[in-house]
Amino acid sequence: MKNKILSLLVLISLNSCAQKKHVLKEEIDKPNIIWVITDEHNFRTLGCYRDLMASDQALQWGANVVETPNIDWLADNGAIFTSMYASSPVCSPSRSSMFTGQYPQTVNMQINNKVLDKSYPTIANVLNKEGYKTGYVGKWHLSGNDKPGWSPTVAHGFNSNKYMFNRGHWKVFGMEKDGTPFIAAKNNKGEPSYGMQGANKESYSTDWLMNRTLDFIEENKKAPFFCVVSLPEPHGPDAVRAPYDTMYKDINFDMPRTFLEARSEHDPKWRKFDKRVNEPEKMQNMISTYFGSVKCIDDNVGRLINSLKEDGILENTIIVFSSDHGDLLGEHNQINKGAPFEGAALIPFVIYHGKSIKPGTIVNSAVNNTDWMPTILNMVGVKNKPKTAGKDLSPLMQNETETELGNVTFSRIHNSWLAAISDRYKLVIDISKSSEPWLIDTKIDPDEIINFYGKSEYKKVTIELAKQMNNYIIKQSDPFKENVVFNQKLQKLLVY
Image (cartoon, rainbow, N blue to C red):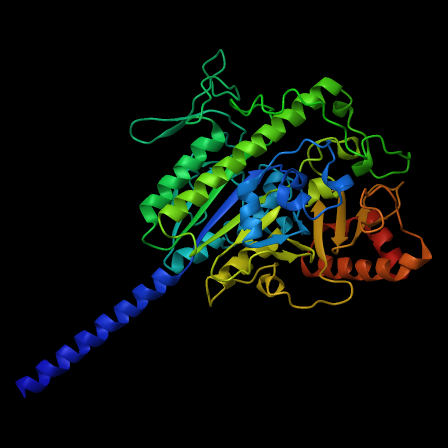
């Protein structure tokens, strides 16, 4: 009898060990995930995007460009999305969609500096339950007005957030002996400053934040990890450390093709001139510094790739490179963001995973950053996924076919405009009484200066995009449905 009991105990023990080994193997096989997020990044500054465009579109600022071999390597060996849009081309609203898979209005984030609704799970919340070590390094911008706001109290699932700061475009960072971070540059009152005093390859924002990211990876490389590194560059103020500050200084940049496009008094506000652009010396300096910042970012992406190679974990790591929104850099006589133009609303999105993505994959379908969360969760095999507004993009990376119009996605600016976007067309409706809807055909008019609305050959496309927009408004409870002027315009299109 004793021998039978002993045998049974041994069998149970062996079975338990086998189960533990199976669980351990599953955890080891789970891919690591790294998101590199830049801030206010024009996609045309990346070689992998320029290579897919006609030269007149790619070389908006002339023949001198930023070479980005490391980001290009991710695209060449992974997938590049040519029609990835920000759910809203503004910092906080866009970031809320990245991490929750929801549209900004759903999670209390229609404008900057609001507090993200914590009742909606983030991707970090989900991955924690899957055994991932989760960490965030850099700009967050989803915790209200705190500035810089180190280590926000509500971390939204990121277990390691010591080097997360809420907002600001600080240039120089430091760290106490106990690892406490601080803003190293000070103004004459001793307060944290956007100044460049002491900026070098150890302290400058892009380098310092990547160093903290590499530290996190080193500490967690034996377990599956999810790490976000959110760089506050190439967003202004316009400054970058040596030697990047002089790399493009002596170049005489062209102004973009659309710099002096015609305007009408009936144009919507998002087409208005920006007075800040009409200062030639300032624009030259802005573009020079911007290019230098992009080059510094690319060099740091190279450091990341090489570190993963040295650790032997590159092939089992998903790397996403993207941004929260674009920067027009003089296109359409504007700078910064907030417009539905490609330079502002379209964001770079490159994703690499050696085990599942065929090198050189190009996805042209129109999608937006509500789709990030469901896509990544599917790629790592999460079974119990929360409901999101976004969709899994994995089938598109396998080149599955689409409808004639293609996927339609949406982008918006609170109390301004809403756009329904395919990989060719954009229907933009704004709330100003004096302007008509705008229909953009990026194939016929890649400069986006012609309104095709009202032309007979575009009637079918206009009606279909209007229907899609109406469905979106209802499904996502978008506040635009309460705006009288907006709805008058939309209803007119639905019976067009």
